Image (cartoon, rainbow, N blue to C red):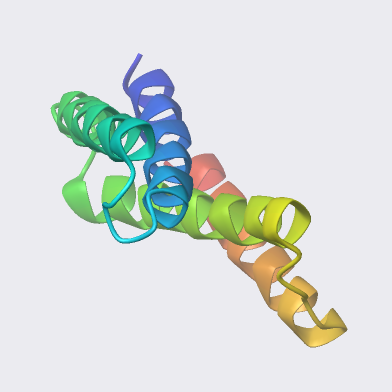
Length: 104
């Protein structure tokens, strides 16, 4: 169950980061509220995962999935370009996350 909490935490991390971008510096109400709710949910789920997983492992997976997810979704939604090198580096982060999961 800990890995389920961790993947949920990463999903909420992606949501809060995208909501933060959409809030335009916390000047728009609904994206700001989405940010607050998703940030709280993300940290709550991370805390539940950390009950059973080492915090270093949980944090690395949480940030890795979050960073990759935000980067790829923002590139699609906001037209933020990615070079082939950047895409390769994102791939390496994902390989690292998979390795952490398989090694636990």
